[in-house]
Length: 320
Image (cartoon, rainbow, N blue to C red; front, side, top):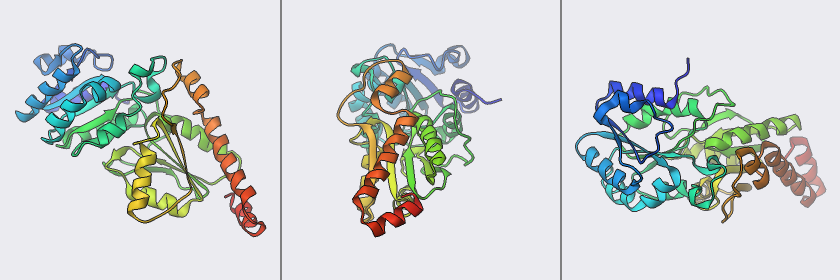
């Protein structure tokens, strides 16, 4: 049977006595662990900065702290402590951010972590893991904990909508489909809606490439460059601000390698989302699979309208 995050963390903690599980009064994903780990489970209360300082001290003494908090408070309230105590010292602290992005649902802007990837990847030595679902989280967790660098994890317990065939490798994206017309590049929870968009686009005759960026730092540069070179259109899809997330990463990689591409970013451009139940949030903000597919189809139609007859013939034959 497939393990949950809590079960996998318990298993790893039993095998490695260096692991210390910490939380700032956020026990939803780790409720059974206090009774199992004893003094290796620490709840500091609503004190994220204290938790990070304590985690750094434990790491300096050979421990591997795995800390839990709501993503927005972890990455914002404790940012300086993460940067200074963990990043500069390059300590093996694992930061688990709960309800990131759209997963905060009905919570307002104060609880919406939409800049967390930008903040964390900007810290030298810090790495970023954004699992698509609980299966991928569980598969990647042993690698992340084993690595002696600091990591930020965008937590999700969502059930998978795709089968992950590739073995998890830090820094390697998962190409689930190799299409040539449009490349859908995404990470984390948005894999779900992006996958639905892929199915709609394929039903309309498009050849779709689907790339799941499991780690945003380190990033799989070759996956980006291949999509830019081989696909007519690249679409980035993320529940994050436009600035600093996957769209920014792809822009940086293309500029670094002196490449260009037609890229359409689907992200929150300088605004927070309207609080509601998850499916209502997606619909209101335009991030359902159907809405994503419609944006892609419209982009292809606009390209056809703007091209010469000779170019149009080529576009129609290749769907893009």
